[in-house]
Amino acid sequence: MQEPVGVHTERVETGSAAAPPPAAGYGPYGGDRVVASRTAVVPVAYRARSVVWLFLAVVDIILALRFIFFAAGANDTGFAHAMYAIGGALDAPFRGIFNVTTATASHPLHWEDILAIVIYSIAAWIVTRVMVIGSTPPDRARTAAI
Image (cartoon, rainbow, N blue to C red; front, side, top):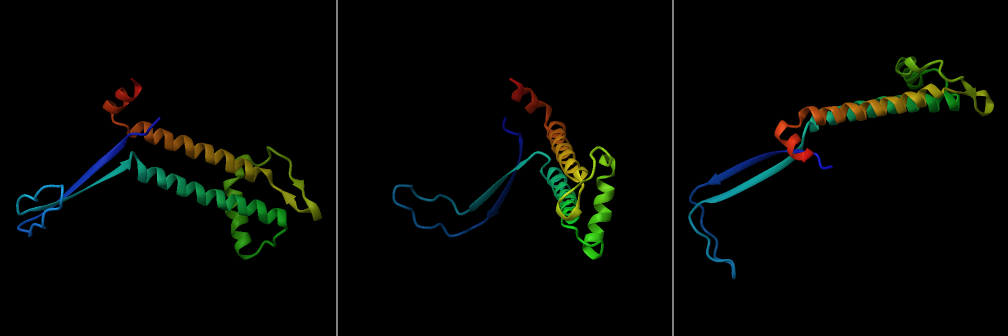
């Protein structure tokens, strides 16, 4: 299904420009005005959806780094400490669903980070779909259903 689009047309006119010589097969250029127009087609709620996906990318990267740092046994200092703290807050709703398992050399694997990535990605997809549905003009919704 193709998403509805918003169309923005811009027209620029300049007066008394010299007419170029006629091209073979295309006929003479008429008048003394040059008109240039530009049309941009932008999907509905494009900016808002882009912000949602950007926010999701940041959250997913933090959670993925936290998972990798725990699995690799990174020390709790500097950047790793920031990822542990921020990621811990992001995966808090999912903590306790899975047991913490250990990888080689007894490094813990926190599966709640992976679950949080999946759930947040699904939630972002649902939010962007709702934005498209909510921002579709009623007349387009009727014609799209037919």
